[in-house]
Amino acid sequence: MSASTHWLATASAQAVLERGGNAFDAVVAGGFVLHVVEPHLNGPGGDLVGIFATAQDPATPVVLMGQGPAPAGATIEHFHAEGLDLVPGAGGLAAAIPGAVDAWLLLLRDHGTWELADVLAFAVDYARNGAPLAAQASATIARVAELFREHWPTSAQRWMPDGEPPAAGSIIRNPAYASVLDRLIAAGRSVRGACEDDGPVGRAARIDAARAEWKTGIVAQHAAAFLSEPHRHSDGTDHAAVISAQDFADFDASYEDAVTVPFRGHTIAKAGAWTQGPALLQALRILDGLPETDPSTAAGAHNVIEALKLALADRDAYYGDTEDALDVLLSAEYAASRRDLIDQTASTRWRPGHVPGRVPFHPPLRSHSGESSAGTGEPTVARSGETRGDTCHIDVIDRWGNIVAVTPSGGWLQSSPTIPALGFCLGTRLQVTWLDASSPAALLPGRRPRTTLTPTLVLRDGRAVMALGSPGGDHQEQWQLSALLRMLVGGYSPQQAIDAPSLHTTALIDSFWPRTFDPTGVVVEDRLGDALVAELERRGHRVTRAGDWALGRVSAVGRDAAAGLLWAAANPRGMQGYAAGR
Image 1 (cartoon, helix red, strand yellow):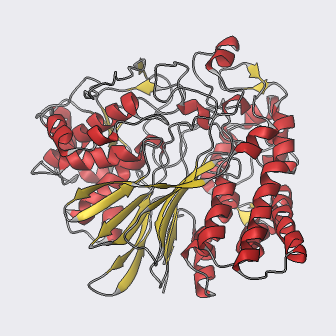
Image 2: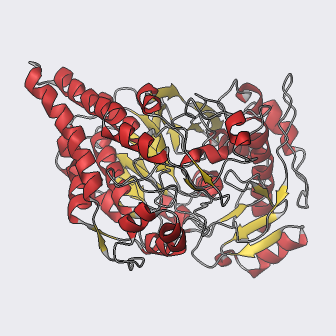
Image 3: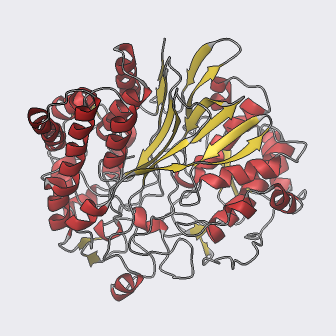
């Protein structure tokens, strides 16, 4: 079974499974297709977080770490010298070291079975021969067309070759990126000729050769040289990037242990505090002691919102690529103390908890003004290229029991100027760091930015039974939380849970530039009903209605142990996500 945010990625992954590949071959094939078909949501110059369990060890969740750190030259002092008090939301100065491609290749090397050329064939074909442009990608290009024309001419040439934004459904080709993938394949084939072992050892060597080509070849060289020239950023001024070819060479994707909590007979697994993943775990811990957790009722929606506000305040105060406080934050005792703060009315305060021996970071509470930050699962893009975080997602489970969820992001086409020789741009993940050394998420060379990317694995009775995730920046955990509560508590089927009306809070420190805060904001789908909205407003929540089908893009795959069947489910909003299998 395969499910993703784009039908062509799902189709590609499923084609691999049909031809005997395993879940890891399939998810990598689909992942590279996402670079081509959802370029406004992810790209080769971006990052990813994955989580998986293998058929050989179904009880052990493993995190795939594809989040590159800050380059060696990305110091707080340098950004201050550039006249900045926040990392810009668009432009090469905000680029972390790209981690997605190396992570995909690492996963394929260690857990896949196919040769690289066969896995990449789908993406190469779509890049070279064309794929239809998604409606939201067309809208994104139109939104930043002026920026492209006036300041980023290589992006204008790449995305508006006729001078105007292409219409939705236009067949878009990216021969430069196809050539990059061809070079990775060729690097591996050169090893085939020199390596006597044509089995697993030789296959691993060929994939490692492709990884080396990515890190030391034309990608690293062209990206560093091109972005070293000053160019327009979202703050309205010009800066040169600091990323170097050596930064590419120094990064290696890796694996990490997952962090877990028990919930209603299940174990929920996430990546660590260098992501926002533990916030979902904290919210589940808090809600586990409350009698009403159904997001479709006023009391349940209120409890979910208030639990999320508390968990996300801890995220902003304590999470980062530093010594974490998860032993305390995920404990039952701490959850009980946080649960006691929830009453019948909406809190108007930003309330991180107390962790012994730690001083919570207090970010500036900037009120929001200007364009809406409500978020609907597609990127909220300003004309400056500022993007309030969004991404794509893919899940795969195979007949042997391998199961994987990956959330790739960054390198959005509107992130920074297109590098002409490569056909893509670098991402802007450093915008989630703070230019304040007291923050656990402070900008520091070699430190990973605290990413919003956060796939989920669910285990029961000693084996992984569900993988899921969603795009949505700061809303990713929130939309997954509603779906999980409906499945694990409410008894909904996976598709029913994904289809059900969703909601989220904006009472958090926005992870993306310009880092705003809305203390009582709640966004709901209208299908939750007038009575529920009125009750939330009576309790003090400031409610924004987003429309009937607007929030969340969750997809999931899993195993029904009782029935002996696999299942998959995908988001219907936007009519682009797709689930498939047999």
